[in-house]
Image 1 (cartoon, one colour):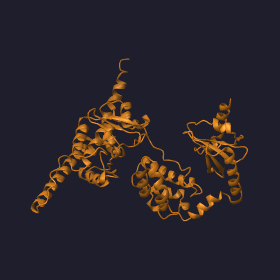
Image 2 (cartoon, one colour):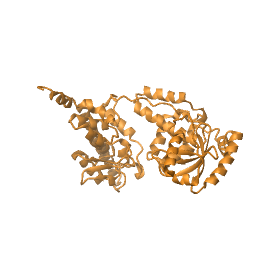
Image 3 (cartoon, helix red, strand yellow):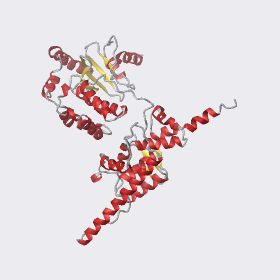
Image 4 (cartoon, one colour):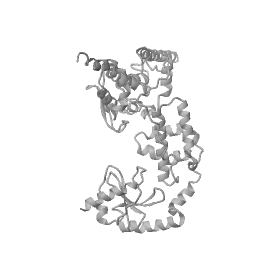
Length: 430
């Protein structure tokens, strides 16, 4: 019976879950040690509010962690201590003290002191001193997230954190639309900025997140998909070949110069001149995202079984998937591995660390191939489009791409006209 009581009670307390939903009334019940012990984790965090000390609540996370907090104002919260390190009575004693400070000053004194210290905190300094170290340490793509925030919101660098408004984000959104960015890209910009400002609010560096409630741009399923036409793919491959030959000629010319000066020659390239050709060829044959390629390790590549494993830790969906290697992709990776040392990243950056971007080399290749409006991510679209046009079923394509929802894969459905024609042809003579 006790378990049932806690479950019903947790339903009433959804008001303060991280869903930004509100209920017309707030239900409080006296917390007891038994109720705290019986509070079971659920798929979403929830609060158990105390009737003995109004303002004290127990937050229960899906992980099972239980934390006493003081709640005040519009969804403001300050952690008091974790159960069972802190007892219920200890939490009530601390909560009474904090609630007295809130009644007199509007917030706990420690919160007000921190706000005073960070009154002049700018967006740029916040990223450098606070959010940057946090997101790099806790997020799977923390470095990329921080780099994107710095780049896309660079005009905010000298703006006080407390002066950022929705209008400031709208200005960034308009600029990105004019640059031709898709709704999906702009939505990612919003999500990253929202998350950064939410942390500032959680850390009492900001009274309220100004982007709270800003809606994402609705994405149309019929959104244009850019992929390589056969002639364009031919030009891309020719541009890669020319780039490799030019690099080889430059290496041999340099060795001739070294020979005259009695210096040790570097020798001709025994494989690819750099990362670009193998990365592009693997992408067009596997559909892997750029971020997935940059985090791929040789431990994830099974050349004998001709399979690549995209680990959950760096997959966008958060789920691992296995992608078969066709003959070209397997040959490219085998050739690339023969010229690489170590068993770390497949496409490492300088010093063996993770490569941050390939913008310069990619831009040169696109220009040489005379491709209009073509991004690296469009190699993934090309992979999917070629499969659909070869009449591979959409569910198989979805699994290869790692889409969590078939709706994402339906963007390619129009590329299978023969499939549709065959479907309606079965009606003839019936």
